[in-house]
Each structure stands twice: as C-alpha cells, then as structure tokens.
Length: 394
Image 1 (cartoon, rainbow, N blue to C red):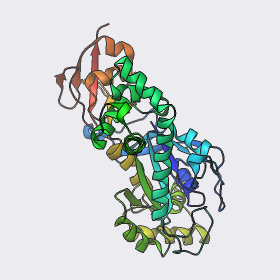
Image 2 (cartoon, rainbow, N blue to C red):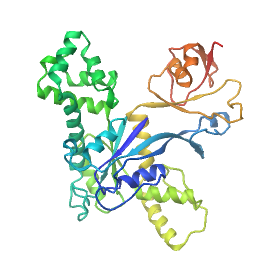
Image 3 (cartoon, helix red, strand yellow):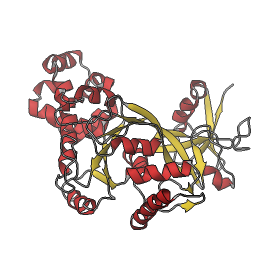
Image 4 (cartoon, one colour):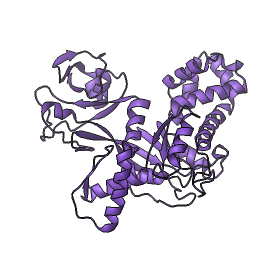
C-alpha cells in the first residue's frame, strides 16, 4: 500500500510527512522545497490483539505502545503542486509520475488561508482554501482524461472488434497507474454511461474520468495549521462548500510531540489528546509543549494519526489480520503475534493463505479462528483484528 501526501508548496505538506514518519524531509517556507519525492514509513493504529489473551505483541515490523499496535504503511511526499500540473507546469509532470502508484492521497491544505495558489505566503485569512481542494481534483481528473483521450477512437474500435468487455479493456488500458477492474466497474456504475465505448463523446469521457479518479485515487483533506487563529472559521465555511472528507490537523504540533516522545521527554501515544512529561525540559521546550497542550485541550487530537487511520480503514477499507496458532501465539523465537497484514475488505481465509505464502494457498486445507477455535473454510470472510491459523497440506 502506498499513500501519497500531496498539496501545493508551503502548506506544511513535508511537515505532515515528517510528523507521520519521523523521516528526514526538507521543510522550507518557500515554493518547491520538495523537489524529489520522499519515501517513508508511517503507521496506522489498531488495538493490540494480544491484549485479548493478556499478552503483548512483539511485532516484527511496527511497534506496540500502551494498548495499541502500530502497523506500517508506506508514504510518499511528492513535489509541491501548482495549477496546471496536468499541462506540465511547475513540477507537474514529476508530481503525476510520482503519484501513479499511489492507492490514495492525503491532500494537505493551509486551512488558515495564509498561502496563495502559487504557494506564496500571504496575510492569514486572505486566501480561500476551497480553491486548493477544487484545483487538485480538477488536475487529477484532467490527468486521467488526457490518458484516456490519447488514441481513444482507435482503442474503442479495437475493444469492440475484439469482443473484450468494456470494463476489462479500460482496466487493462489504465493498469500502469494502479487502476483495477473493480474500480472501473464502480466508475461505470456511478457514471451511468453505455458500455459501447465508440459512442462516447468527449463529455462522456470527462465524466467517466472523474468517476474513475474518485475510485482509483481517493482523497482525504488534511486541514493543516488549525493552530492559526483564522483556521476554525475557514474550516466551518469550507465544510459547507465541498463533500470531501476533511479532518482538521496541526502537523507542526504532531511533529513536536513525536520528536519529544522519541527523545523520552514525554510519553505520547499518536492520536491521543494528552501526553505525560517524564523528562527534564528547558524553558523553550516547556513553552512549546504548553502551546501543544492547550491545543489538545480544545481538540480531540492533532489530526495526523486520525487521517492515516481514516484513509486506510475507512476510505480504502482495509482490515488488519494476524497469523497465529490455536495452541500458541508465539513464533519459534518466542515473539507474540509478530506479524500483522493489512488486507482488502471481504478478503477470505484463502486470500490470507496466499498472502502468507503461495504454498499455503495452493495446499490450503482449512483455517482456524484462534479466538473462537472454530474451523472455517476457504471462502470464510475475515474480520478486522482476526487471528487465523492456516492448515495446509505438507
């Protein structure tokens, strides 16, 4: 799974990326501080399933903090976006190339209205952030349309002559940017267009491109800089102007909390609205954390962890599944539930067996739900936080 962090320059995009990953990324208050895409590992937050057995997981990847387990996902922080990216303006071509493999996008906007359309600092509250939401959608929709429009007449005729179903032909056409048959089917359903591709007009293609983009590159809005005085009013106004999913956030405060936690100055669980001081702080650190504490007292969290969880579990609809044994939860080295896999919604026991190893899938006999100790078949649909033992032929 790859999640793209996108947005125009100077909105806190790289700060958000660094807060989510603690990976080093250039943070600059000027356009195009990010030139090359940064890759890093972020973590989604789930309940530690081992706690149900009065144990604590020892993950091979990720970590456990308190009653929670943090499962890794890959993030990519791409070059800052400006209007006209689909025409190659700014870092447009590189931006779109970097995003071609992304499963979903986190669009970081400056909700305080202090960054204009070119990523330049302006007086706070003087710019309407709704423009950013609309222009990103327009740029991505145009990108998909342009890919479709190239040689469309010939493509549509060949699909019709070959007898290839329209949805399958389009899925194959777009496979290079991580678009699959299921996404195409949903786009057909929501657009209401005919399966006869040769009858499509330019407007039909644009309509389909928009629906396909919604399926292939879903977007969640990170309304960043919520700690600025103009942000709250802007957020309430924008919520009435778009149906996009918007989560308020302060990437700067989240980064401060995670760095302080890493330095063992505080105990902080990402996504929580409190922290505990456990180290010796200097005056500057005390002042910074006091500001963060005040923000958390009036907000449920900094929003960063909420955004990561929302996009993985609600928008992409993944579930977390653990391999384990009915007789014991440990592996041969004594690690408790060392592995956790993020699987698509409606995954079956057989899907999970194949995810573990091809041999397990091909030689699948049955699976056992570790919690209930009940045997389940290959078509059994898995639930979030299931622990499953796979029994395969030797």
